[in-house]
Amino acid sequence: MKAVRLTRTGGPEVLEVQEVPDPEPAENLVIRTAAAAVNPVDLATRSGLIPTSLPAVLGWDLAGTVAHAPAGSGFRAGDRVLAMTAQLGTGVGSMAEYVSFDPKYVARVPQGMALTDAAALPLAGVTAVQLLRRTPDRRGKRILLIGAQGGVGAHLAARLLDEASARTDLLVRPADRSAWQERRAGCPADGAVLTDPAQVEAGAYDIVIDAGGAPGLFEAVRPRGAFLTITPFSAPDPAVRPDVAYTLIGVELDGDDLADVAETAARGDGPRQETTVLPFEEAAEAHRHLERGGFRGKLVLVP
Image (cartoon, rainbow, N blue to C red; front, side):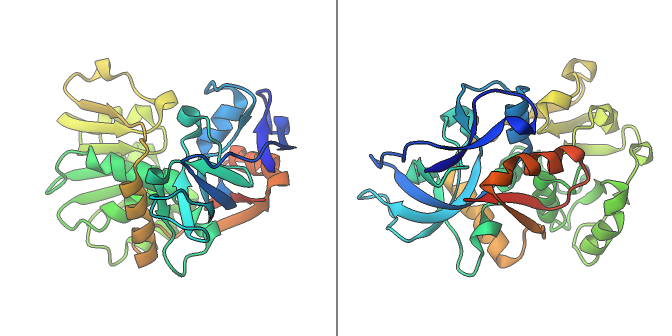
């Protein structure tokens, strides 16, 4: 089968589409991949910023159809599914024609949802769900979400803006201001759309959620407030503010959270993001797109 493979670290040019052995069914589902999303963690792995064993098949997110289902898995051949393989932890990359994975971490794709759209959901959506689960009580609080235009940020914003009991400000890129003003029109949560970190008041927020990598805004949290981040390589030093509860979020495999993300998207309550589809052979170009910055939506690769 074909797979997007990494044999050495470096620039996008090190990505290759290679022939690798088909996975053995064993006790896992074997999924025929329809699409696999490209995420920032893939760029960091490819560049060597995040170490991984080589050679490696890249990718965390996929959607496709079940090619083999072991007895008792709850699935059968032909079912439409999505999964987050957590490549760095499991060694299983999603950018392959067939992927073998534990069925307890696989969820069904809702009826009517395109597989290319489903592939864009897992990592960003599950990270957002797990981050909000670890966020302190948000009722009556003033919240700042940094990086609402990104993958995780968009999922967070969709859920935060549905909470009328909190005031949520969004910090986005200037080019995204008008789009986010339109999105929050009619949303239950009060708040503003900001485009410049200088607009953020020091000590003004009970909770700051950083999905964009802005450690300097640690100062935006008031004493005894909370700062949560998903960006380990651009995180503040928690020792600087011992009066603030600091949390660095690492995503975990969870089939129930994955199903929640898919069902939320199917109801239309999730983020509205365009999906750009490229073949496996253009994986390097997909990485270049993301590295250049300013890209909107999600990039997915198809065999």
